[in-house]
Image 1 (tube, one colour):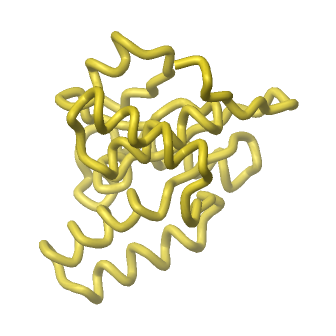
Image 2 (cartoon, rainbow, N blue to C red):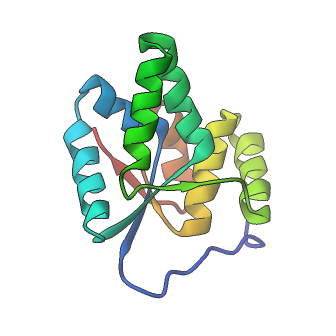
Length: 149
């Protein structure tokens, strides 16, 4: 849909956006978690831009809270806040409309539609392991994925 315009970065710094499953891989020490840790380290050294939308961060908080308790969820949330991962609050109009497009066309979760639209707006590569829900997007949309496994 060409009426959506991507935000163009003027420098050559790589831009990534985290899916909830990428952060959960760290908490669970799942395969691929080292890759996510490496990206966070690069962001902390200002070598890349690394983002997460607060809605996707809510998925992390909820999952950890449900499985390990609210105190652990708070610890994880504070740990993320103490990194150079930039937490995106709210939705721009472009992200709002593009999320509706993804949700309508692909019948996906609201959080995934926000992730994709935020990546589209930032010109970011999506850091994820969620092949089940996102392989179709990689095949049908002009978007970049950084698969952690």
